[in-house]
Image (cartoon, rainbow, N blue to C red; front, side):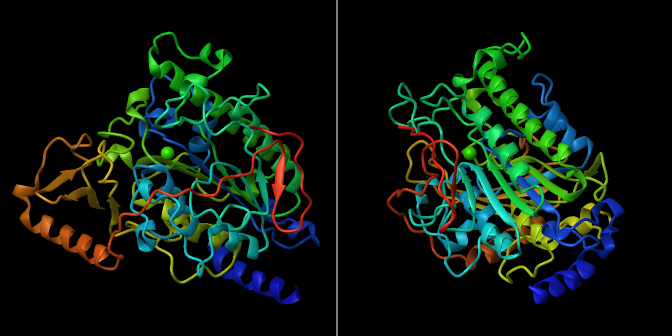
Length: 470
Ligand SMILES: [Ca+2]
């Protein structure tokens, strides 16, 4: 323990010195002796099917999201933040491992159930081993059936209180239900679980991962009380989508209230982003970008991305460099004051957000999405972004767009820029050459949080299950 503390103190001094520790940040480590720096908490809010243009702080004109907007007001708004895939499972997998999921054979939702590496710590395992209480509320949807959240690093896990399928849901897609069999609405329950976790663990450093079902289908489950708060001008499926998003904003408001009440605003680094673009058939808004969930276009992967750390990061600042959900792991490792695994694809973005480093954190970001054997998505996506440029490396043609001048990806400039195309294609080819060849795999199941009410705990910690959900 002494060695750990010494290591932590040294690493903290090295890693956090440039961040100018404020007096309020100096608190007891893990409730220990006063005068030591407390390890900051890390909270990751990873929203399902979130359109770039559906948050007020990112230009949404018609859905109120005041609590999420407050994160941007009090933190850094990253205007070029990206997720790893235009679909759920691989994006979640890559966030947890800090690796492009294609590195271990995950190229789409059809490879759901593929194991994540066993010789590489997940971000939850890493933070747990760095002395954090790790907690998760929400969807997992990655790894194989032996690699659930409690097996891969989370000590505390909110049970799944709603059925996995709506009784009247689409028989093919089996939309997940927001309604519990006991009449509870999932997003509200999840908001309460977030508060419970913060209050229970307020004296210790914690890592909290919130991966809500919202705003994934079935948005028509949104309760009337939220639909009443949707502006009258919002109609059709977007009305239900808006109600679902308003409920989510309230849940995040509950979490922020708990952090404030516990005096943790300046001891908590918060990431807010999404797993993939908004569902176009639900009338989600991905503007100004083209496409959305499952498409190859920028709207499928360009996400709202906010980083807030009270008293440390600037408030109300915009950052234009390329950032990725891959960066969450190494950034969390830096604030935990522990050495990250060597094999990570992201970077610690804090020096960039603080203005200590200039330029782009990434020379390029890459996508390969190959759910090609699914008749509804016949086009494989191979793409690279560098600076303002995004190149699609199609099997038949190359497409080049300048996202600053043409966010809607309407003008293919490949023909006019052969040298740029060649340079970007070389970057992509180099990245892809290091990946295993894609294999078509049988769609498998992932592990999911256990059903019931309340919390489940890792290992031999006490079990708590006060109800059953069918
Ligand atoms: Ca999703």
